[in-house]
Length: 125
Image 1 (spheres, rainbow, N blue to C red):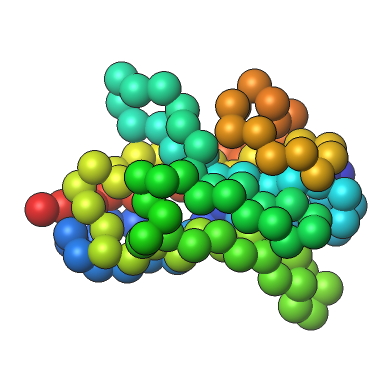
Image 2 (cartoon, rainbow, N blue to C red):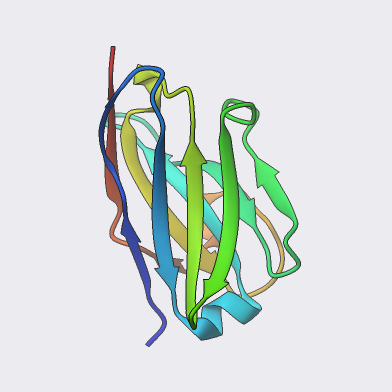
């Protein structure tokens, strides 16, 4: 089955770091673009970072100096990461990984067909 399973969220103080992960089924890893989105209460879901199968990346300008997206294939497990540094209270949100079936790198949620369940990140001041 084509699945995305996130983990690694939690609570951290402002200025701290977190790395969240998304385990990706192998089929998706080879043929899809992968993205991180986030959504906080009362706000629209927004794209944070995107990576495609050619390891091209896009990072939102709102986080580009603090966040990094990467992908790893290790021991037959394919994992998408989002490293988040210098976290701010406004980074508090549910973070979702998402996939689409080509190498395009759109930033609209409707462009992605597969979604994980989300992982909560809470940054306190």
